[in-house]
Image 1: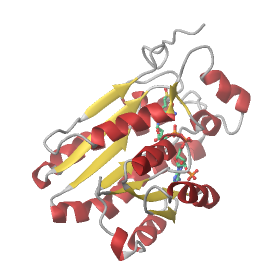
Image 2 (image 1 turned 45 degrees about the vertical axis):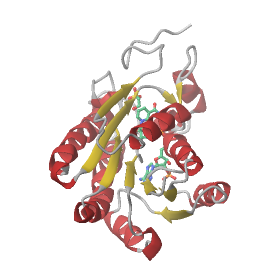
Image 3 (image 1 turned 135 degrees about the vertical axis):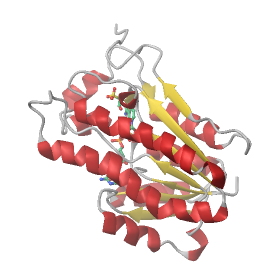
Image 4 (image 1 turned 60 degrees about the vertical axis):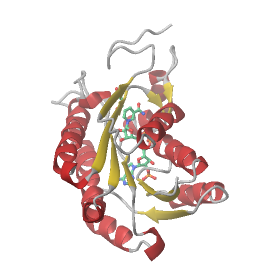
Length: 250
Ligand code: NDP
Ligand code: 8X3
């Protein structure tokens, strides 16, 4: 596939697995994240499969986003596929006990970060009347679970923005897809529980959680459909999970 993809949150989990399957399918890559060492490692690993460049920036910092994206070399300036994936949950507590820094982080990264990156890239797609945007939401954008409050709100916003983009970009032939996973065993829970590995591990034990590669396969399937096919919305659970709180554990 002779296309260029811009992937946020490529240093781990779903974003990294997506970079890997895209590379195998010959998609040129712009890989983004804050952890430079990991970006370099992934660039080195995938460069024998496709052309890869890396951009280090924090999606929640508007100036950093614009500076990084405007620094793209001429031969990478056209982005065909934008994967809005960067994001995390920070904390898990009741609304009355929530931490304001955690709330800021989730709204700034998951919502505003997605918007900053989209605003920096989508106008070149509308100019060409061509492009693809994949927004990684969550089941937390489809339902609300105890103590999930602000994370769920941020992912409900992603769900709304996905629908909004689909409407606004319709006359520009731009495809927009929202993918909403349930439990995927990545670094997600390490981040949510601030490095408490025991708590993080417990989230994915007693059943077979989704793997980052399962979601990456689906993302590749979505972006590789014929031009007239737009899968707008996909909710993906592990077989053992029926909702955010209903898990068939051993
Ligand atoms: P990981 O923690 O493994 O990956 C998160 C990625 O986001 C990292 O590459 C991280 O890169 C990047 N990121 C986080 N904050 C920022 C920031 N401020 N600026 C730039 N990049 C940032 O988790 P997942 O792979 O699981 O998460 C990917 C997406 O999938 C998220 O949007 C998450 O909400 C969503 N999701 C995850 C589920 C799960 O169960 N794992 C289920 C449903 C949705 P770096 O730290 O290098 O900046
Ligand atoms: C990640 C899945 O259930 O922790 O978005 O919200 S969940």
